Image (cartoon, rainbow, N blue to C red; front, side, top):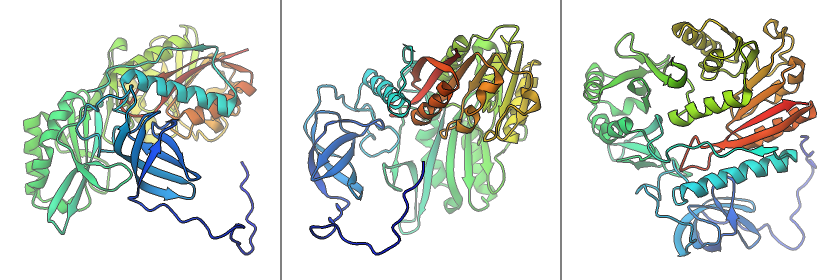
Length: 452
C-alpha cells in the first residue's frame, strides 16, 4: 500500500476555527455502547469521536474514564455501569477491574467464542471477500486453569523502598499486585501465591528484571536479572523452588541456564507418544489441551497419507512436524531461526522419529529454489507468527501441494494471505477458531485450502 505524499508546505487550520481540543486523560464521560470491536472493547460515538471502551458490552449505558486520546480516537475503561446488558456476568477474577491480562471475563464463555468467530468471519470478508465453504465448530477447552506459561512483572520502587510484583495494568506501566490468577494451571497458581514473599526477601531486589513461570513435564521459575545476584539470593530462590517442586533457571546477559546443570523442561503430546524438550525463551503454545486438539484437527484436515511428502513451515520445536511424521512418508520442516531448527531436530532424534528433516531458511524468500523443495509436496502446513506468511504464500503453488492448512494467530494477516492463495487457484474449504486464550479477545484460527 502506498503512503500519501506530504504536501511539504505550510499547514493551515481547517476552515471554521481552531483545531479541536484533545480529550484529557482521566476525563469521565457517559456513553451508550453500540457494539463490540474485534479486540473485545465496546465502541461508542460522542461529539465526532470514536470511543473504544474496555470492560463493557453492546447495548450498555456507562460512564467511562479516558486512558488515552489521539485525534478522533479515544481509549477508555469502564468506570460506572448505568444500564447493564443481560449478557453480562460478574467477572470470576477479583483483579479483573485493574489487571490488563484478561479483557473479556465479563462475557460468558459461549459469547466469547461467538465474538471470536465473528471477528474471523469479518476479517475474511472485509480483507479478502471470502467465506469458507464450511465453518468448523470452535475448538475450545476449559475457560480457566489452562495457561502453562506466564510472565510476572517486578519493579523496585526506590522511593517506597519496596518491590512491586504482579501483572501490568491495562494501558499502563503500573503493576497490579496479584494474589491469584485463575487462568494459570494449578501448579503455577501455587507458585505465584508465594512468589512475592520470596522476591521481597532478597537482599538485592533491585537486580531483578522480571520473572517467568512454566509448567510442562516439570514446573520452572526463570529469574531474569539486570545485575549479578548475590549468592545468598540465588540460594534463597533455589530453596523456594525446591519447596515448590520447581526448577530454577537464571538469565543475565546470555541465554537462560538451569541452576542445576542438566535440568530439562518439556511438554507431552500424548496421542502421538511424543515428548518435546523446550527451554525458557522458546515459543510454546500456552494452552496444552487446545494445542493437542489443534494438532489433531490439523492432521485430520490435512489428511496426510502414508505415501505422501509433507512440508511444515515455521516449524518451531516440531509441535506439528513430529505428529505429522507419525502418519506421512516424509516430513520436511523449515524454521527461520537456526537454534529452533536444531532443537526441533534434537526432539526428533530423542523421540526416534527418523522420517523428518529440519532446515533453517529465510521464510521471506521464495522456497521453490531450495534443494529440499525440488521434489514438491502433497500437503503443506503453515504456522506463522502474527505478521503472517505473505512472502511464503506468494509462490506456494509452485510446490504443487493439493492441500494446505494455515494456522494463524492473527485473523487480519490470515485474511490477507488467504486472498493470495485463492488467486493461485486454491479454495478456502474450511475455517474455524481455536480458543487458545479464553478470557481474552485474542483470536487464533485454522483454515484449510484445497487446490482446484
